[in-house]
Length: 53
Image (tube, rainbow, N blue to C red; front, side, top):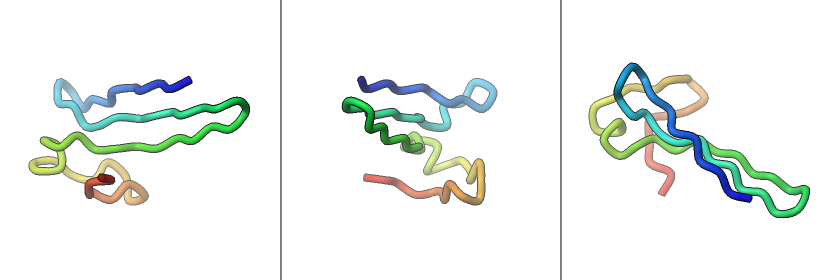
């Protein structure tokens, strides 16, 4: 199962919370939207404003 949840601040797309699951193993991660990276701010100190690609 692979799911993606879009994260917004007001009407602005901040990024994506992604879940990848194979059997009982799950991986979760957050990825900022490219436009948010150019003009936005860190939404949490543990989520640095950088591309994960």
